[in-house]
Length: 223
Image (cartoon, rainbow, N blue to C red; front, side, top):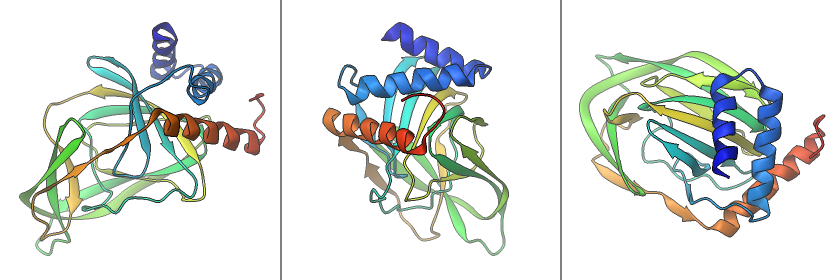
């Protein structure tokens, strides 16, 4: 499996054989769906299932799954955030929209910037003194079979429709050790959130649902 994941990571980073990347990603989903491969997974506060597949500093290969009609958690801050990682992602199933966000220091602010530090499955959010407003500077819809890159420290918001099952393979490369950030309410105090564990059986079922969605889409490849 390690050699397979290294190949998957290389294909995602290179970005020049997306057809082969799709085939390899579907093969991975089959392995997970049939319990021939198992990875520790959690429920991310932004509404998707998240499993790290391969860790080799400064990179982590990850699988993200948003399930159709699954309940989305209630956020304590807004979904607008940035990363300390450069994220290279490939949409294996479904589609999503990325909105890049421009943040301005404002005399009449709408949000406060929070710093986020992680410790295991806990995220600790601390309000800063920086008060801002924001606007969407661009929006891009990304469909199955397409690859995209999100720069580190770029505020953004990823939206997945609730009636669509979507899965992405993500290569995250650490760019800085500074805290990640999110936009939150002006009066929200410091607090923490815990990422709930997702069992192996639940994650296998999620992979099965992705394979089912691919079959429903009647894509050219045989799934």
